[in-house]
Image (tube, rainbow, N blue to C red):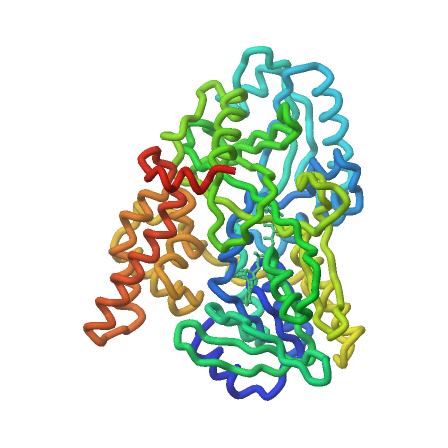
Length: 511
Ligand SMILES: Cc1cc2nc3c(=O)[nH]c(=O)nc-3n(C[C@H](O)[C@H](O)[C@H](O)COP(=O)(O)OP(=O)(O)OC[C@H]3O[C@@H](n4cnc5c(N)ncnc54)[C@H](O)[C@@H]3O)c2cc1C
């Protein structure tokens, strides 16, 4: 993916079939679906690909045991099918993950054991392995750091696990391979209308300041928690449909859960699901479900959420994790579609598609696991309702870019200078990596795995990137490096869980 070439295509194409706003899982999946059908497709992302919710998930490709508990059979069936397809199509980034559900009472063992058997049956031939009951001893073999007191046994089951931001890049590259144009740092600033019907968008290249009018037969709004902002561009009287809900994760060292098995606590005493999942040699603990008032591209973990995870994980692990054990913390916002309930945890995770009076096509909700099906559904609707020739979905068996190649390392701290240069070159030349934050947060996952190490590495990364980007005017070269380090540090402080942050930081995180 070469940004300059993509811009040339933007400038030389008079009209597109499908224009997508938003470069998260939903938008990128839609771009891939549309381009692989043969539609002329363009996508605009205001920041970097997957900068929003799509790089901040729990990293599970799952049917959602919790949704089974809620009785949402359709969602679970669909997600289990998608889980199986994703494992086949992106084996480089998605793998089969073992989970243990520890049981501290006998009724739990029967209840969750039967539930997980149903989960297995629903997955059918796309299942990842049968669940089974474990004795207390076996449970502790799989998860040796579980608190043994009162432990009755457990259940072993399988789900998928993945690297969300890397998968986003892989989808973008696959879409580009089918001729899609995908541009990061290109916010959509307005909608083009002719006789009250949408015919395109106004965009601005935020790296150069240049503005463009882009014509398209269909405009798809795939902006996650920003959905309402785009719908308001279309209709100033639009009433919000998104109820954003924040979820946070704490990342700790592997000593808290050695081995390769994750832990799933289906119901904490206040009814939440809690996970401890091995990820790139660290353990991700999460998550929370907190109604969010502020929509931001960099949401901040609240103190209550941090306390909740530390306290509850401490109940299940033999060693209580402390704030000082946390290597990084990150927050994401779920784009939940409003329902009758005020409790965000009870809102549906199904996806939602709407055609506005002006023709604006909106897709939101859903989850990472179901991005492919969401894309198929929205492009089918576009095909049937706009002037597009009939072309059918091809993504069910489409291998994603890089499926047979080595994967970029998630952490960079043990890399030699030569290895680092090679990865930076690849990120800049092939993955549209434009900033130090793109590199440390989403091309590699250093910021999410160890925030302090990421901060330490930022000056070197900035220099190597500046060299690679051929930024040879001495002033702008030095200026770019300085500005990149400052911008990165301002973001990275929110991932740093140290107690020595200024009081003003903790003030802003109080509910
Ligand atoms: C805490 C948490 C844990 C989760 N865990 C899982 C999990 O384990 N498994 C799972 O399957 N799902 C999970 N999910 C759900 C999943 O992450 C989301 O459903 C999915 O990432 C949403 O993708 P999206 O593309 O709709 O939104 P986003 O990723 O937010 O993408 C929308 C994009 O639109 C861009 N945008 C907004 N306005 C404009 C504009 N004007 N111009 C251009 N671009 C614009 C934004 O910058 C953003 O990048 C989790 C969600 C959260 C919050």
